[in-house]
Image: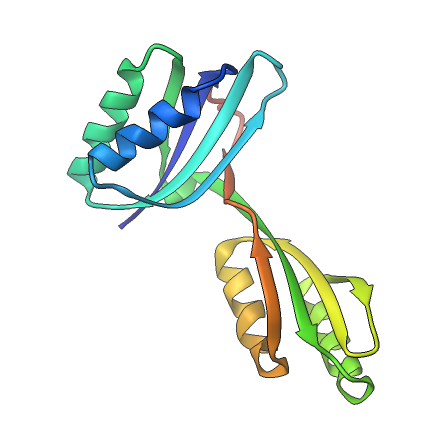
Length: 162
């Protein structure tokens, strides 16, 4: 089962290393990792998507809370989060195919950010489910290169993780 964990930490060197080491020691594979400074430059938010059972996730959350530089840990339930991932995708696109690819991009909310005589580079930011749908629609155009960020997530509603 996938778990999305949001961790607020002090913005210091070595914090990410200690957190990833904890995951490694527990045998918890990280599927996605994103780190960024929050509205407070002294605090960073780490968003981790990992695969594992519920018991391991609970133990991991307890261990994360014990780390010195950790301020807050919250495992976000799928029903209470908004998630996004950014993908840049370079596809083969000769003139005869371009209108089809442009239509798919328009419908799915993607945009063309670079064009050569034989390729298009597409930018799309969406939920993982919609990104997979998009990939399925364009895979017939031969994806030459795909780059993706880690998932970022925020809790729905007015509740904040602070």
